[in-house]
Image (cartoon, rainbow, N blue to C red; front, side, top):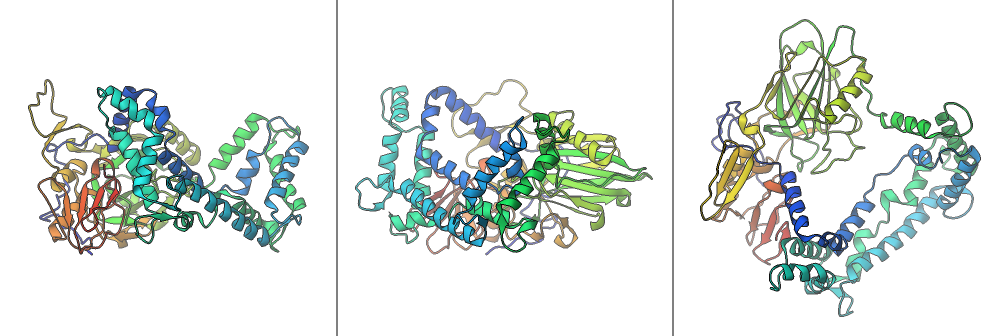
Length: 577
């Protein structure tokens, strides 16, 4: 497998980090492009949106999301059960009903036996539901589902939008891109259950993904929570103990002690609970507070945080000479490692946050993926959750106002400067100067293959891509700062830092091409002949097509939205159309 090595500035295949303006322009963010295309498509199809929302693939996606819901704490669950304006006794009645539902064996105690019984029963329910989801495509009733059956059933279920598409095309039978994608996604989801690779999904195979039950969302998880209460030190929770916890919470929220909980009291309590894990050390008397924000930085990091499948950016913060201590807060959307230089001894406290907490995901209950170099560990603090501060790339904006208010409340001081930009190269403090190359600005990308294209007006923010995309050009366009080499041992991170095995996004494609592990054909597709790892972050506009040739193992990692085609079987995986 090709592994990422330290990339010197003079590397012949990765562009050096630069702040010089000019060159290829940044494209519109891929997520926004996708949303624009979706809105345009929906505006043309009208009622098709409602029909598509009922399609099987969306139901399967919704089901998967429902099973992945995070576990609520006991306090969160109990606070949600408090009825506004109702007396304590009415609240305790509902709590008793909840207890009896959690008490699986009906012995009026919550023990490990209840966890085990709930787990068994939820597993049965899960398997039954999973089998129904897959076997609804068993058209011939032989107990197996094959790809042709899924496609036939999906076309039947989506006959209304298919007919509308044909009508709009002059009664010429056709599948729109959206419908074809829905069908392909369902085929991919169902056939992924074919563990023995015999081309068909059996009842037993369909049941396996849900064999472990409801997980975070069921009564088994609720019973485990109760057993974590202090009163459960002996492995038992009684109804009396559970009611005592609920009553104590009720009286805590009822701040005016009138025997009922008002809407304002409940709102205030939830706001206080939401700030748990978002604590910030108070600023010293002489410290000046600075708040910085961005969507991302212009450069990628050679070091990842916690996972090889997450894209970590890198930026710089230069501390200018002076006497006053600085309290620095940085909020970004993307995972980022900040390199501090200059008069770093002035930094009294550094707080960082990112909205993303994993590969293409953001879980508000998890810690952000951030880190820094140049600042001692004892001066850096991390939030326990990623939703403590709102990221922003413009000030003033709704995000900046919320973040500044939270910082003011926590530190006891109003920030001296609030600086932000969508894509940055570096910040300077305490001046608040922001460095960003023109290539880091969001621009319009026009893909052109044949014909003539006339652009009238200012074309300085337009990139015209003729022919297939090339990794080196796309790297400059997406990440004009290139890749910043960072020593993982120097990083103080919210997650363990490590060198990338393969660099993320287009930097990884350039790296793999340079290593000879893969080549690129005239259509821009990537031909893989050796064992590789997919670069992280190949989603949206970063997605490409991989051709896995016979004899080459299927790559490790996540292809994102990229299309992967296997030569030996012709099988398509990922975001193929």
